[in-house]
View 1: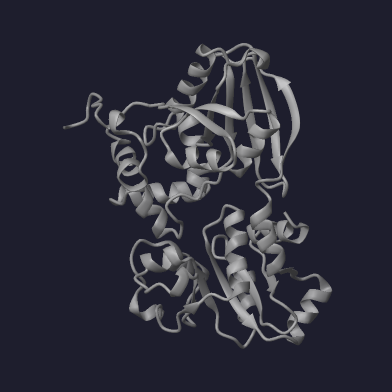
View 2: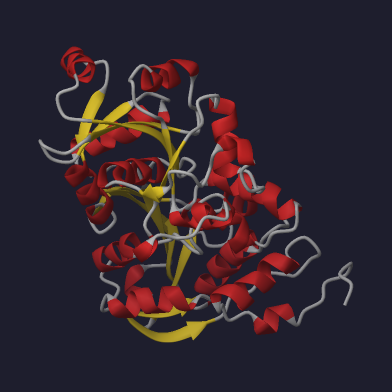
Length: 377
């Protein structure tokens, strides 16, 4: 990731204001993340004689009842003068459509390139994809003073776009050690870091590599703290993780790539927000949409880079997800076989699993046919 863009993510995660530029003669966007927006940052934005704008994704715009702009552009909305940080957070994440007094829908326009770059940075930082912005013409004396004095950091939209596109493919091994597992004593863990330094992944190597079968049993597993560690019954992730390790051991060895993309890429905090929306009746995908995310934000360039580093070119892929098969095959890794990997059905995860079948085309029909005790037919 470009150095300044990485620092920009840090600034926004700390609740500070960031300046994003789009060329010398273009307006600058002074932005702050809606999540964690404090009074100090909010007052900084309001100190200019320009209207504040709430910038959200096209997905969030649809959830707010706004018509999408051409090309699915992100949306910039003028905020009413009485809005405060706490009410802006509700406007950006509440399931209900905005109240008429908020003025939402008036002054809606496609987000500028600088505003879109701000959205990109908060997403890379795992925050709610929404920012408050004020657009300033070039030459603002107050902003120039802040930049000179280091009050705010400036990042160019070019740097942000390069950061978004180039980090996952540039994945590098950092450390490796034997880590005996309960399911497979002869195991090693290789620790990888993406080029920007924000995301870190691990590969679990089971069995001696010279004895791995051909094709190599492989699982791409996206992190799920609630399921993998705590045994959440809302999903089947933990069962798939442990079942994959056991299967790979029984086949004579292979690799499990553990990817840092919690909640299908939206981050742990946003996943917990989505759980609250699911309690109100939304399925997984619609809940993510209300928060401003698409159907599935996971990417597999890092997994491809890890497999290439390990010299794996032909796999027996343990998955129910057609997207993973496509990602590997399009990268030149042959999926010679696909093996389904199922967890159990219970009354807490049935709607989640059904949504994966109905909305995302996952191969889970056999799993859906199960009926665990306690589930009504």
